[in-house]
Length: 119
Image (cartoon, rainbow, N blue to C red; front, side, top):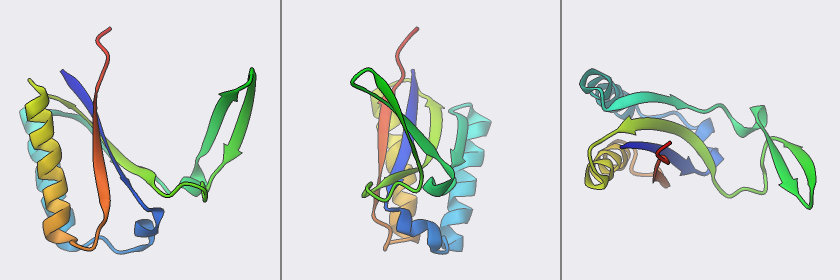
């Protein structure tokens, strides 16, 4: 089953230097994920000032350009993975967040995991 995992945190972290230990550990996790075929795609996202939102409300479309100052948290990156079970997805996300806990203990964020609809 495929899962979309995305990391959500305050945009304030975009201005901070990511610890080298976390970058190294993430590089190993990503390399392992691609080699085993579990990881299908992943990327960090640019600052929300580079983005926009289009909303449908009351039969009309509304466009809002970033930055999204009203948002307490923004999505900072994503990973598309293919795993055998929800438990495997939970473990992969736990490993990902454990790297943050160990190498950047000041980081305050979350990884949301959602299974993709079968089409």
